[in-house]
Amino acid sequence: MTVISLRSADPTGVRTDALIIAVARTGGQVQPMGPGQQVAAALGRSFQAGLTGLGFSGKQGEIAKIPTGGVLKAPLVIAVGVGDGVPVSAEALRRAAGAGVRAVSNAKTVALALPSHDDQEVQAICEGALLGSYRFDVYRSGASAEQVSEAVVITDRNRGRGAKQALATAEVVSQAVLRTRDWVNTPARDLTPQAFAEAVTNVGGKVDVEVWDEKRLATERCGGILGVGQGSANPPRLLQLSYRPRKAVTHIALVGKGITYDSGGLSLKTHAGLMTMKCDMAGAAAVVCATHAIAELGLPVRVSCLAAMAENMPGPTATRPGDVIRIRNGTTVEVLNTDAEGRLVLADALVLAAEAEPDLIVDVATLTGACVVALGGRTGGVMSNDDALRDALPAAAKRAGEALWPLPIPEEMKGKVTSSTVADLRQHNPDTSGGALFAAAFLREFVGDSRWAHLDIAGPAFHDDEPYGYVAKGGTGVGVRTLIRFAQDLTTAS
Ligand code: BES
Ligand code: MN
Ligand code: ZN
Image 1 (tube, protein in one colour):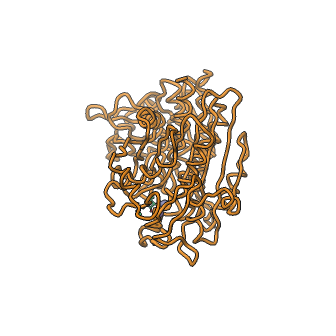
Image 2: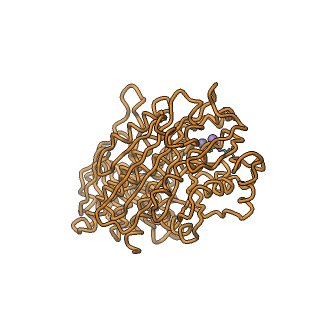
Image 3: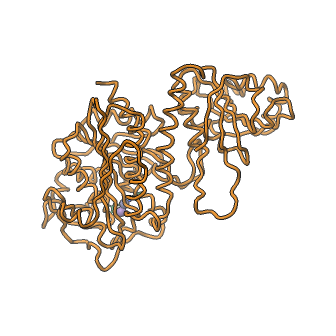
């Protein structure tokens, strides 16, 4: 990860390969912000003329590279547009830092001269720089371009305890997000359930890990996880992580969908549908990494984290449409579409989570294409059996710079879930309207009286489009920042 330091300095005198500034558009004029004004002043008329010549308008994410010709200590200024939002939000700063760092090619060091009025903004800038400099190069042979190894964040808050804490928090949060991205980006050939379990075990830290293999899953009656995993040569796993701080104010359970590859099983996906399905363990990766971050931040929140890992493949031993499986709590489920596998592995994990009697349960899953249809590729859905929780999670997400939106679990879904002619529940509704909501109604059957919320991150977990802000192509690490922020909120509310 890039090394970041805070420094109060005149940005024109900072020795670095590239100096990043933010430029807003106000009343048709481009306007450098905060310490960027000193940079613009030093460059004089060539600053405005340069930007105009490049056709730079200051819209969000726009980049202009301005050679300084020796006027500044830095050879290159990178201007990042932040649009006309005044004042700029923390998230706009996070994106500007990310876009600026991404625009740097073949530089080892950068300095960010962005406006920072409080420590939250310092944290956002640090996060943007750390997340924006992410690359996933492990499978590339040959030399790749120089990566930014050092970033200086210029702020006159640098001496304050709050700012130092903001940097430390940004490092923990970003490391969790980047580890999630790495796991999501790792091809399913290499990230099998066993390999995933091992990778989680190897993280170490203040978190205890217990792994259940397929034999243990059988003695523990986890028929959902086993039913999904039985078509694959790579057997399933269930991981339980626990973080028990001494003075916990609350106890939360985090549950993640960890399908290391989702072929759809016998209800095989189309070719287009298969392309990104290594991402189907993004929920498990997010809850695991958030748990580690919560522990590393030392938050007084006890966390029981469960990650249900399986590979969903067709094969001679695969579950068939029409089969009935039995979930850990004894509930029988008629499987009607083997591509609706996430809810089956989550069912066992939710039952286990409820057994731990936490104060609340949050599950995170790339669960339905229907949620992507409803909310698009950048926003996750929140469904819950508790109104307060359904509002608290989007609020935490917003503060963390992620996008979640509440969705209902309409009353009629209960009847659809319980309408199997052979088993207690049916897993799939042939009427696909409201598919994300049906899935949530199914999951709700397994949480008992627990307060529970479900995050469907099928849209935002994997970014298959052009990079923007601090988001690269591939795994995004979505959910991690929301869960950390949510845990922090729990410590201040009580
Ligand atoms: N993993 C998919 C959902 C998904 C879709 C994630 C797109 C990321 C991007 C899930 O297991 C799935 O296949 N869901 C089915 C459910 C259907 C069969 C009821 C879907 O959405 O088509
Ligand atoms: Mn599926
Ligand atoms: Zn899936």
